[in-house]
Amino acid sequence: MSLVARHLEANGLPTVIVGSAFDIVEYCGVPRFLFTDFPLGNPCGPPWRQDLQRKIAEQALDLVRDADVSRTTRKSDVLWPSDDDWHPRYGRVKPEDVERLRALGEERRRKHSEARKPG
Amino acid sequence: MTETVRYMERTRDYYRALGYPSDYVWARFEAVPFANLAKPLSQSRIGLVTTASPPDLGNRDASGRRQVWSGEISAAPDRLFTDNLAWDKESTHTDDRASFLPIEAVQHWADEGVVGGLAHRFHGVPTEYSQRKTTELDAPQVLARLRADGADVALLSPL
Image (cartoon, rainbow over all chains, first blue to last red; front, side, top):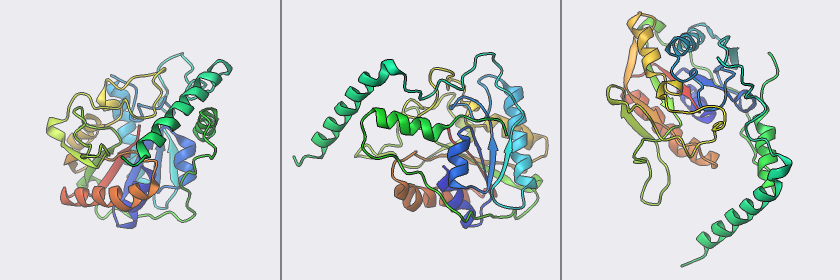
């Protein structure tokens, strides 16, 4: 999506990205970025929380209005409304998963190479 | 800014665990383009862009490859297809479409006069391993569709 934002801006269309993968978006470099520190999947606000979703949309629109230079990043002050600490969870490779993931990778590569064989 | 999740590091570790020999190389640019608003925000039309797919997976072409797709704001489904995307399926869910495609929230601010309105369509762009497909095929499609809708600003919200 960062690549799309860059293309739109280069062609004169202002953009704002609302996203939760801070490091990936910042690494690419985009014009305007509202960072929401939520689990991946709900960048625009926690599910069923219309109040917080409106607040985040307002912050994104404020950023469109206020930014006057590229790489303008703001962090939303909306907090994930749960005591559950989700931060350590996503994508972690646990020791007990190592063997299963290795087998999964081998299976994927086998299917991929079969699909590429000429019929 | 407080410590944020290092998704690039976790993604690298995950694919190494799968046994892939080389790491994914993320796009990185020194120069970042910037476009100014052409008119006040209160007169600007906002176009929305998501990475989700339609519920019927109608964005697949004959070879199964995902393409840019569009939907009417007024008939947006309550749910979109997100199972193929990399989001935190242990910590949350995507049953509320407004949590990743903010039609209702932006409409609220249009009703309040903060923005001029919403474009009549939203657009879906596939997340691709190939940066070339995104840059050369999908991004120009999204631009053409936003322009056709008269959008003055794009709000992009990747899952």
